[in-house]
Amino acid sequence: MKLGTSELLIILAIILVLFGPSQIPKLTSMVKKSSKSFKEGMEEAEAESQSAKAAVRETASEVKATAEAAADKAEQAVSDETQS
Image 1 (cartoon, rainbow, N blue to C red):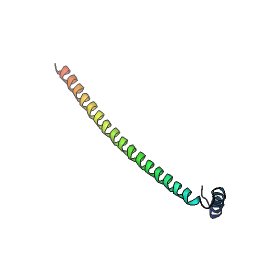
Image 2: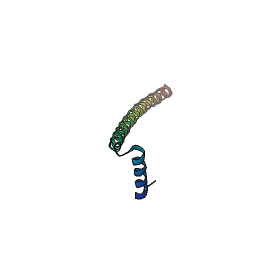
Image 3: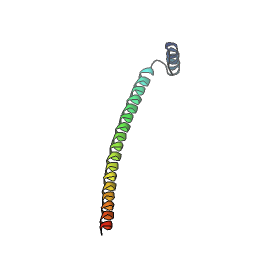
Image 4: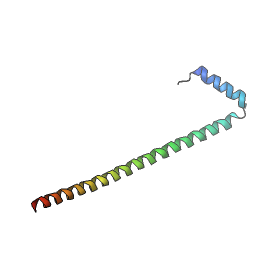
């Protein structure tokens, strides 16, 4: 949804009427802080997500290696059994 110039002016006029000119700097400050906090939270969540993905990949590699080793042992046991 895109806001045009006229929509933004209407929104700003409503804000000015509701809060008055003396409150606008406080509101902008609060919006900036909220935006910064949200951005930091998103970056933190992205970092945690990347970390979790790496951990899952590592665990998957370990499981694969263990499964391959078990398959090799089973194959060897079957081979030894058929030779006996």
